[in-house]
Length: 198
Image (tube, rainbow, N blue to C red; front, side, top):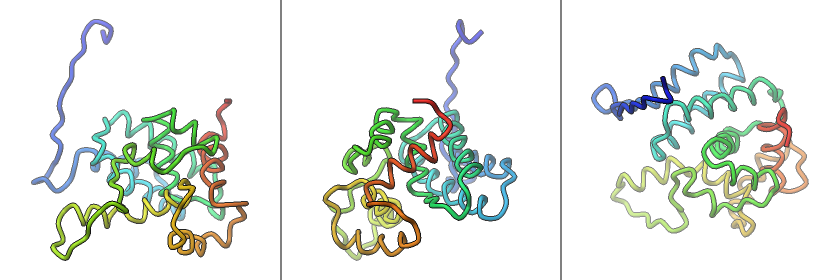
């Protein structure tokens, strides 16, 4: 029937007095259904929170969210808990794999630049932002995305600021990467695409 009839239904963007989005409710349902425990639940829960923020900006369909979520679950199931598993990087790569495969291919090759992913994640470039004490919604959004953005700057921006490099290097001492720009292709190839033939 799908070949003959196409029916589009617009879901309400927000539920329960505009406090919870449909996507957020759906992602919480997927997390509950996953039956994860311990560190895996923490990791997927952190990815879930990041995906909610990205989805709010990018307006992903529920089908797209389900595809992204499938990749996250595979990472949780196949990458040991004591290995490098960063929710900001993993969720970003999973979003690229589903929503922008060309950029994901660049991430696998180690040629992806931070400037290319700003729009894919619905991010603002906080380097260009003007902060003031008024606390506008724009500034709160910048604050919410800061952790995610800093990780992506660290792993993909060739001319990353020394301040970002110094602050992120402290959390990397336990892992043995040759350099910070090797992290993204490692995660794309060995964690997201480890069972796929290229």
